[in-house]
Length: 69
Image (tube, rainbow, N blue to C red; front, side, top):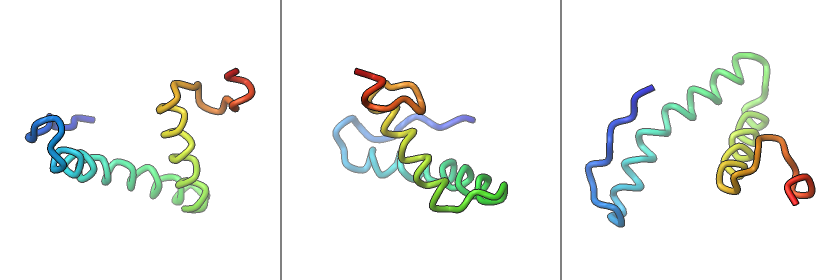
């Protein structure tokens, strides 16, 4: 998967919007793929949200707050 580099300077609000536009189809494909495999869209969305939280906190996927302490 190749994502092009940003065309806006760091701090420019367009930069975040540009990144969102590039990432959106990838996330949409993940959700669609999960739904095609029998997961509900809500389950897939919640899973993606948890993965994002894990990445933000540098916690291994599936590890609870108590396990990370």
